[in-house]
Length: 495
Image 1 (cartoon, one colour):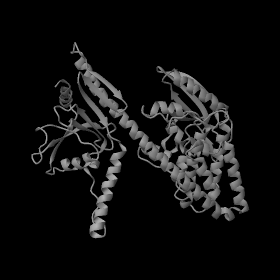
Image 2 (cartoon, rainbow, N blue to C red; image 1 turned 90 degrees about the horizontal axis):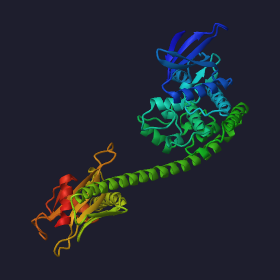
Image 3 (cartoon, rainbow, N blue to C red; image 1 turned 60 degrees about the vertical axis):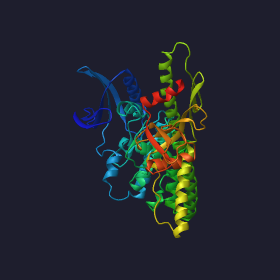
């Protein structure tokens, strides 16, 4: 027995069967716990029972202990030609149409047979082997779940390999045979044009592309492919499971029809009509994907804002609890109503509230359009690109205010504007800042250092003046919401 290669879960050795002199592969896997043992043993039992010309033959399996480690092993046929990934990597030109179609049919027939008992869950070229007659055989059935648990990060719970994972896999839906059909569609695409439809440098990139990006038109990359084959691959890789073929048997039948049409040379008469139909379906799907992506962006933003607002309220609740532990006669009362919080002590109160989050982007767009229109009106054309506002530069996500009851007869309440800002794209949670306005010496209406917030839309204009250090009737200060600032706010309850 000699070492052959290291796999995703263990090591593979080659050996000669002394009974028939055939070369065999021995997969040797160390067992970490009882759960792994039960899962692997079940999968090996299934592998032994799957006897099909397009599935790797597993003769038997067993187990043993060595140096304190328990091992499971299985003995299967050995294939000198490696896997489909090795084959694809070795190709410098497109795979001949007849070869690509045969490979697709081999994969489909193997999965069709396997789906009677098991979902593969990790279909990819690395798990498809070639024999000496250029037949494809599928291996490693059902091991994706265990591989996932041993090799993936804790934050990512999908099963499979990034370029081949179905949308429902990314959304952590339950396993179905339709997941395998999606992965097959990606493999068929790769077999047709020697490239993946979706590439990325991170899990997030792959996720967004599998969820929202239309499958690139394969006919733009290879002109000799039958239109029906392109449609078949597109349907297999549909985002919604219900839009795919309901079973691999349907795919096998379509594949046989395509091959027959090629032989009869009837395909060309339908090409132009099918091309137009395919383009119309693709355009409709793309619009729907764009709508779904926009909706998820909105939903994620709302979840982020809700989390941030609740975190802010929790900061104030902790401060109230800390003070109440020292107060004997009258306690501070706080209550939350949606995105508003009121903190009350006797006849004084502090109020925290927020403006509409959608108003920020709308204001940015209005400002940009106004500047462009002014250039058009003054010069007849646009001279300069619009410089980003400070709201954009500071990554302001949400705006609100925190106020205390007015003293004396002042109309303007004391308080701050609240800003939720992100430091950059990688900042997941952002940080709360306070902004305050004072009357400048040019137009003094209120006492010196009497801080007050501004409402919308006045805040936007004054924020641009303040961040740009423009001399104005108001001065502006800005800082993170610190413990010192929190104490200063709470002091207003006791004045």
